[in-house]
Image (cartoon, rainbow, N blue to C red; front, side, top):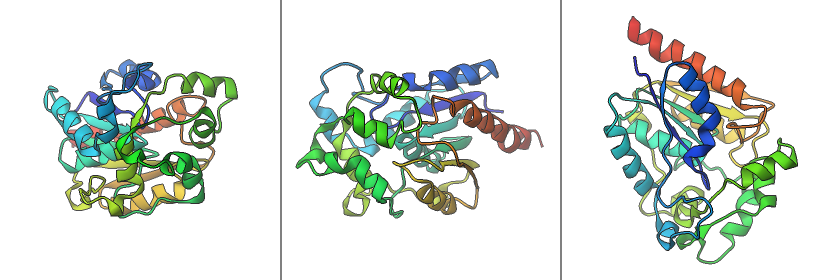
Length: 259
């Protein structure tokens, strides 16, 4: 039975965003690893190299960290981290995968009106694909923290850092990306996976998450929280989601290993 959980944050985030989940899973006896992606330094002027950092760079970094662990972990990713978790699980690096409101892999069209509104300013800025990006509070509040009280949303916003423009391009314009960085081969997804959608999500809408779940139907379970939004790591949402994830792990990973 794997007792290591490897949690991957999303765009503009750091590993500290998993503090609620870390405490929850450590209380259940798990070892929790919450890496911070390269160049994601809170409160610092962004390293220029961040702008051209690829999803593949992140994935390769995370693979090295996973290979250094004593056992194959359960990989949990949120948002862009959910896409990275998909890529890592398809490489055979996870005992199981949990993708919380994940970014869509290549081949799934995710540009709904609310997604376009969330990224419009960034993606209409010439050269965004080679520069660090950062959302305004209004953009983050609309797209990510829309169910949080404004004061709480501002506290979460203060914890954000810059993100790679190249990764935004690789996800948002995946069909134009000649490196196919957002591609995931579903036939290589051999471990059990849980895909979680949220009915009030604006930046990775539930309609898109259902398509991701269909991609992995051979080994996947889909769960939708109709009254939750994208930010499943805090607010009133996180305990419902963390509890469901823990139960799913017991049913689909721990119990099966004992059979």
